[in-house]
Image (cartoon, rainbow, N blue to C red):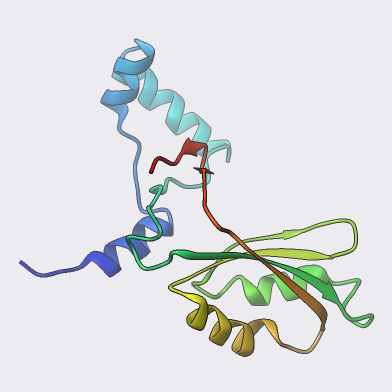
Length: 151
């Protein structure tokens, strides 16, 4: 059988999942039609933006997680959205937040290992408009996407 794991993981990360209505109905003891109607209503209202899988990132080759704190140069300080938008196109970037305090942006990056993270930093993070960068390495993830991660 053809191995399409990497393609499937990419689609699932990007929100290619659907809710399991029958399982939800059993869990909260409501009819499936009621669940379906309410989910569609939440989607229409924009409350639900996407459905995605919670992955074991080590098993799918993205086990190196880091948080990159970025301080912007004075000429970019007033436009953090521009830098964030440019960074958001990369597959390694899981999330980007514009923050307050000593840093302007925090980026969650997932890579296969330290070497691939380093290549990503050289290629993407070290750019015009970024004055200072500080990387925090995740040693172990305990909870993700509102789910407790087991050993």
